Length: 274
Image (cartoon, rainbow, N blue to C red; front, side, top):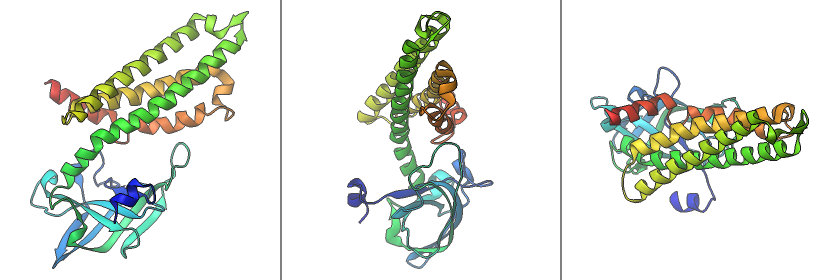
């Protein structure tokens, strides 16, 4: 019902985990959405936001607390809810930096959303483990996508620097520009290697938590640096909408926040080091 049409690209899903304050954000133990058993059904009430792809999604994956007496990582469950199920309210699509994304980023409320037992994804209490299994590879897909965009930005800036002349020579002959190009190339190369190592470990069956965290932090910050330098090299043209650099720059800023803020991943890395 869900996986085959999803894999075929016929439908989209929306993942509802993040909550507005005082709910769960970087700290999933603050999860406030509740699912309470009612016979052979579950009743879900809660408030989510940054539910990517909410508008037009065929179904929602909803993270909810199913046992308040257990820690979040043991007492949370994922539910599959068709988008037309009564009790799902898309309050709005959140305005944000950068361009529009497919389906937007929804603020969603669940009002006595009634789902059968078979709506549980995996097993009762496995929600946190399932999200962690998803997030590692998902972080790498974001890294790969943004590395591609940053590579294109470097190519645009390099082409401009070759053709543009100032103070009697091309920009590529000025040391200040050469160093920006060199630093960007090093950022991209090191980012690719971190992604490749993490992907290799995942392929071997390793959870690679530290490696995916390192890749996520480095690439998210490196991409912002590469785009910033590309805009600087292109000058006035760089901040215009005649090139895609400024739009990419706006959108890339969020990468240091979604799928785990850089500070949270540094905490994970430091714990492993200690």
